[in-house]
Image 1 (spheres, rainbow, N blue to C red):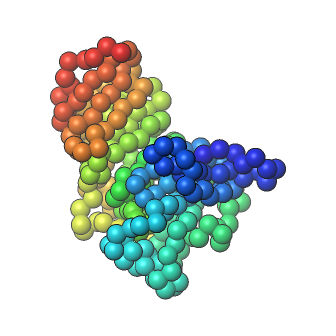
Image 2: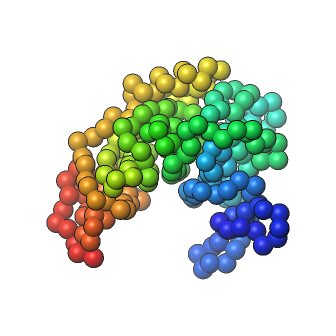
Length: 252
């Protein structure tokens, strides 16, 4: 993600292949402060707007069905929506919330609670705000699944490979873990109601803090094939953690 060479003030997203050759690109009119990427989506966020680009040309039949269903809710038939945008305060209730990039209108005033960091997996996108509110959106069909509060100002957010746990590094370098499983009864809750406050129902089943804290953490990474395995960088040491038990540190 970089600023365009012309004087338009736009930014450009370039997707490259394994050897670094550009294969596709898109232009954006929002400042890309936060970026996340999965095997099929690129998610870019400014202080208050989220942009989602389905860059992968070959998606599964299930994904096609999900996208068609989401598009149908907006009254556009089965038209595939490759680029979508939404404001962080929008509800994403049926018929409202997310828009094609060309039809999106920038908000007149900035959000009172800006986006602090984002992350994404194949199943969901997590948007953490400066107040500690974390909003979970389903992918590839876009709908808010849950909203919950954490007691810190997040700086880095990440999710494990099956989207059941979330890690947060706050502005003081404190790492905490949360259970963010969404039960079937609350999945896509806000997609069935025009009342944005109903998304708060997810608080009862998500966002439970686990008994794990580490100080002076500046980075962490979940394993791509094991939901209980992750590595953390703590000062000059690297720790491998299985479940909630760290192994002996490795000096960097």
